[in-house]
Length: 109
Length: 479
Image 1 (cartoon, rainbow over the protein chains, first blue to last red):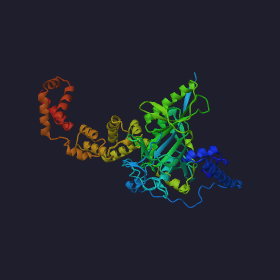
Image 2 (cartoon, one colour):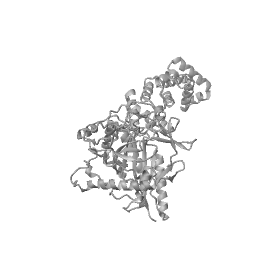
Image 3 (tube, rainbow over the protein chains, first blue to last red):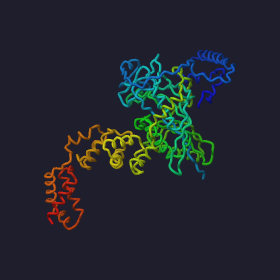
Image 4 (cartoon, one colour):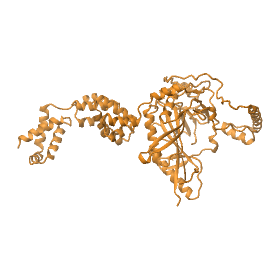
């Protein structure tokens, strides 16, 4: 039997956020920040991490990790297909479309 | 000279053959005009919530049980974040920390070459949409029909050492998954595809070399060629003292070479976290036992039964059970024509030849399951003769037309009218004086030739026994 305590990956070490990490996060989140925004974000994120770090003070020996605060049984959907084809209405939400497809900038692979 | 060996691991993605998608009720049917099997949930509209399809969990557990996996009792889903237009939510719901199944195995090879391939884990996730590069504009077109189709990803241990072991494993995995009905495994339609992780090392060394990955391989032949080429490429680089870069490569099967794909080195930071929109999974012993009971007779057992109870030759039983679509068509055909041996003969000789000639895999065959049974029944009831039966099979292969209707509409029913056969026989004798003379001099081959000529005049539809009998009588009269 596999239990949640078998998880091997340890959570990342919280650390004070530097300029390098902010640039990395910009890339991952596909956003561009100004110099002033970078500094403010770094300060905010460091504060958030410090705050969360308080949890590290607790003794969690013998406590199973919790992945969801709700403990009810999951609700399933029965496997019945309903074709709710509303393509044209949906495509109207897209900035551009062509031949029934969403049109996006060329992806590099 | 140093001898090298390849170390290969596989990640196989298999689309589950549920009726509806994993988190919404959209149909999973293949094809369909772009974006017509899409709703607010699978197109990632804000404010929607996923609801797990019950069958997805059951199918994944069934696949795990059939490959000797341990089933995870307390599972959950995780969110894998990345920006790419094939996923409109900008994340994929997958399983990282607590996959549904772990520690399985599949036996490959025969006799002395038997070997166990370990399955590291099997997890559930949603498929992504399809991107088509627009040849006209400098843009990409996105179709979300495939987005949200349930997948299981089966991650093997790096236990393979050759392309043959890999294809053997994939064949067996495909057969098993088809037998248990969780996937049709149609590689042509992309419902089974493999990522290959490959590195090389000197034989005898424990430590692994740097690996490359080739993604989304969708044919056994291409997989085999790609493995051989990549093994050679890596060995020649190492022998020349050049390093192997850890990278994703794309295999071009037409050119027979792989290319490095341009991808940022940091692209693999998916910022996984527990999926907040879905509750943790609980799998009870009762559920596992119920699913275990649903697993049908698998290949080995069925093969043994075909030999013992149906009296089929070992070779035939081996081929027929090698693919579940063949099992289905064989059992259906035998049921309709009432003769297992006859059904097996037709499949082994005629149907397999058609599949080979047309280069169609059994699971990709478009042929109604009861057609062959009806054709065989018509031959055994004397409605058509055997060669017409063969012709009907060839002509209807890949078509939905009912063979009984086809025989009627095309006037293919066997001619057993004595006077019609006599006319044809007379003509064959009249037009082939030399063959007649040869026969009368004792050359039996001439009889076959004359039967062929008479049959030709009957456009192949004569009752062979009557033709032979009448021809024989007419020839004997000439002695």
